[in-house]
Amino acid sequence: MIARIWRGITLKEKADDYLSYLQGTGLKDYAATPGNRGVTVLRRDQGENCEIMLVSLWDSIDAVRAFAGQNVDQSVYYPEDDQYLLQMEPLVRHYDVFDHVVHDPAAAAAIAAAAATGAADGKGGKRKPR
Image 1 (cartoon, rainbow, N blue to C red):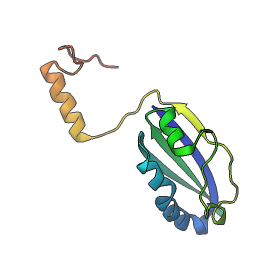
Image 2: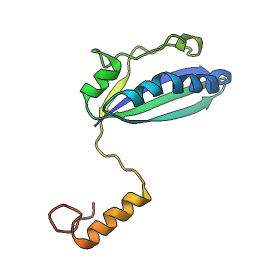
Image 3: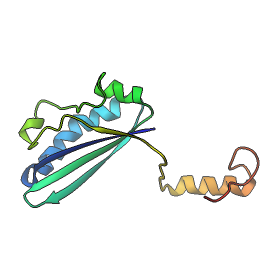
């Protein structure tokens, strides 16, 4: 799995409008791209500015390419981004995801049930704690 990290800075007074704009552009396109596993939107107010970071997860670099185009390291911008962003960072960063932990009570219950029956590791044995 690949994590793609993009960062932008806008004026704090425009941040809510920009986040709404992102929902109809980039976030919508992420969701529509096969191989996208979701995105986390981070916001940090800093004085008069607001930093926004998108951490999207992808099945593979080919899935990223389906969203971003051939040059996966290049940022993807939309027509009105320049009305919000103070600078247009040209590049994003990609990381191989080492571990991804999701707290889902239903999934945790299913794993616990499987562990109790000895089926958690698919070999009939119990999982070893990490």
